[in-house]
Length: 246
Ligand SMILES: NC(=O)c1ccc[n+]([C@@H]2O[C@H](COP(=O)([O-])OP(=O)(O)OC[C@H]3O[C@@H](n4cnc5c(N)ncnc54)[C@H](OP(=O)(O)O)[C@@H]3O)[C@@H](O)[C@H]2O)c1
Image 1 (cartoon, helix red, strand yellow):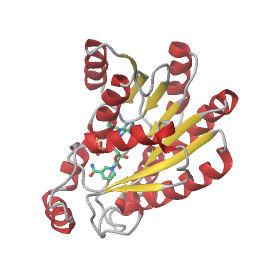
Image 2 (cartoon, protein in one colour; image 1 turned 90 degrees about the vertical axis):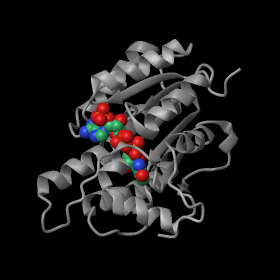
Image 3 (cartoon, protein in one colour; image 1 turned 45 degrees about the vertical axis):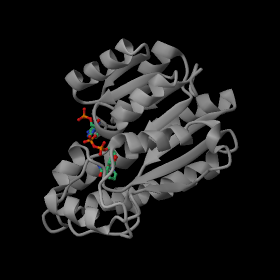
């Protein structure tokens, strides 16, 4: 018996990285998974793998910089499975431009992908979870949501805001819905590659574990937050960062 048998989980940003690892783990634990992202080839490959491993999933192609896309994801979920139990707001993008080089358009794009789409998708899913009397929402923040780092000013702003959104959502949506966030440190994914080698070296040198993390090490924490194993955890931002102090 799986920990998520009978549950329906929407995972945004699950065509790669930690979202995809979480999709695989949730499906292995019995959830019906909604995989989302922009890249159809990777979305289809993730769903094919889940099905080949005996799980159940669909994919929805959606660009979350477009604020109509959360409705598309929600509608496809309801059409396929008729309900939603778990929402993992995980899609994210980074811009490494400092404030003097960052356009307003790019700032807004980062905010829409990392924050506003999560707000909209939560608005859509929360009434369903409230009605069921139970739900779990998990938001991906970052260690860049705890302190500022030179360069990714829009990213840093969006992740600080994600912390506030998480705490405010927990306050408003309880007691039926648990809302928590994860603040990953350096996790070896495509996004981390994009941030560049010096960031890898810096984060590795600051970690007592002396290494960066894997997406699967975020997936196990997401599973904890998606089940009654975390029944008295609410409104929290869990750092999963190998112990870095930045
Ligand atoms: N890796 C790290 O070290 C690290 C550290 C702290 C926080 N995080 C956070 O972790 C989350 C997942 O990132 P990751 O590290 O797993 O990187 P990743 O492998 O690059 O995954 C990012 C995911 O977000 C999706 N995405 C990006 N832009 C999108 C858009 N406009 N519309 C819809 N989906 C979009 C991507 O899908 P498509 O490409 O198919 O669109 C992909 O599935 C992000 O929120 C990120 O900020 C990562």
